Image 1: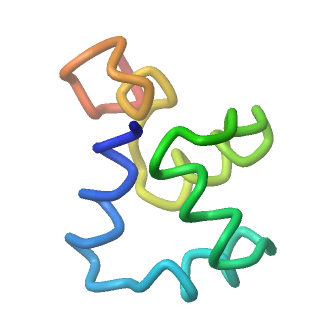
Image 2: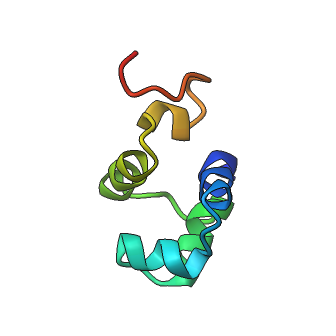
Length: 70
């Protein structure tokens, strides 16, 4: 499960439908990303990181530092 992706979305008071529109995918696909049911494509990871202004490594729990300039 990609807990950080969900937490970042909720911190901005966005729904899965709204995030799906931002990422040009359906709510169902976005929900599958959050639950880890399907792998998130690299291009979507980059869009998520850019949108939330965090690093891809932070989204993937490879670091606890959300800054993009490590």
